Image 1 (cartoon, rainbow, N blue to C red):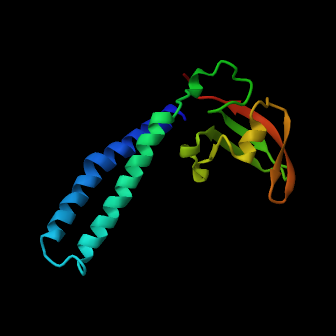
Image 2 (image 1 turned 180 degrees about the horizontal axis):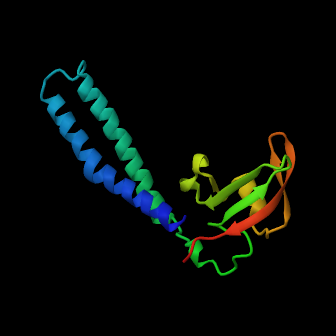
Length: 154
C-alpha cells in the first residue's frame, strides 16, 4: 500500500470511531428512550448503522495491522514498472491509457488507480519503456506498448 493509501485508511478509521460512531450511539440512545423499539425506525436504522460502522472498524484495524507500506517515491530503478509506478501505455487500437499501480484497498478506476494484482498491472510489472506486454482481456489476448513510466518524487 502507498503512504497516501495508508493515511486514507487511518483517517477513515479515525472518522468512523471518533465522529460517526458517537453520533449514531447518541441517536440510538435517544430513540431507545422513546419507548417501543419494534416500530421505531430511528432506533432500528441506528442499530443497523452501528453494526455497519463496527464491522468496517474491525476490518480497518485488521487491515492496518497487516498492511505493508511501500513508498514508490523511493524506487531506485525508475526505468522499470514496479508498485507505485504511473504507466502510460498504448493499446492495439492506438488508445493511450495512463494508470497508477496501487494496493488493493486503493483501487479507483475513475482516477486510473489499478490494483497490483489486476491483469493489466501484472502484465506491466517489470516492463520498461518500449516493451510490448500481453494481457488477457475479456475479448482475448491484447498487446500493450509501454510508452512512459514515472514515479512520484521521494
